[in-house]
Image (cartoon, rainbow, N blue to C red; front, side, top):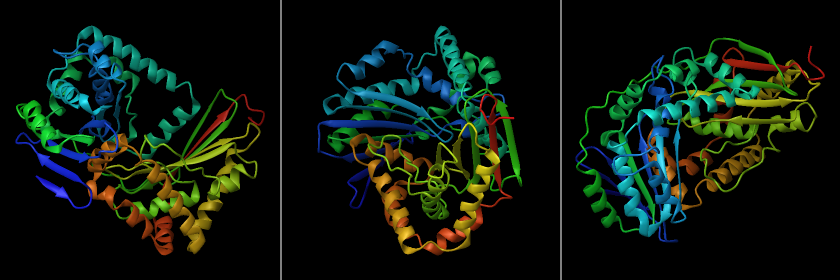
Length: 434
């Protein structure tokens, strides 16, 4: 057992490989329990996309001990909340509960690590639910354009696939496919259990040893994709369909979160399109009205909205800029303005004022994502999914250490016209459509 200095964090590993991270926070009688599995769409094979997300759904349908209703009541009857998420890199489940119910959440997670039933009727019900979710998303031009851009940005890497999976794969998936995926990856040695809040670390460690210690780990064979560092020169995706607005999406390669370039890239994003939140549970937001693209596009009446998206991933991903364009607007003209602002960013070092503003906004957004017990539980596992906990504890100092020359060199390295994908969706119903 080891403690990270100044972070009140205890880390422990069970004999079966389960990693346990505990952080006592005695500000309120609340605990947040997270269990992270090292499996997501990044590890799925062609023809088997969507398995990780579908397995996540099945984990709420019942085990040998708990029915689906029992799982829901366990949390809701005491005023807690729970959810689960599947990403390209991981799958996670959490419960934020009154602290005197922590033991029951640990019992639930230990049980569904090994005893989920995957009832055939429930599998078919969820097939319908997920297909409907997928088809509902396809009603939105933004989804269709983004999926097409993502597939063009990755030639073979599974980051090209939607976490939901393709409709063909969803229709072909069997109950045995799902159950084998579950049994293969839901192993103590492929999991991190994180608990933050009002508890005794010694007591929780004993409970975890009792509840999880007897679960055996089998060898976990995970497909590790080859990284893709570059994009096809000058890729263009063009689409047309119904709608009242045009959409432009531009994607550039971005570094993995563990790459030192990631921090300068975060400042680059803050300047160009506004900072992205890395945490879905933050309680505040930072507008992007001071970003160069907002000022050049929205304030000048060339677009309805513009925002960027930068994610922290295991492998190099893509930084995307999304623009919604006026019905009588011209996507090609908007792309020209985006190019002008990117060229501006690559032409000179930021001034001290520009850099300080970008760092301040990124720091504030990060702070909003660290302000409650649920967030503390989130960060323990999330940072470990692509790096380690010190990535989180050192994030603000590393952000503040970024220099104008680093932002300039990062922009020139990544924001290249010959290394990007451009996606344009033209709405037929728009007044300016051909």
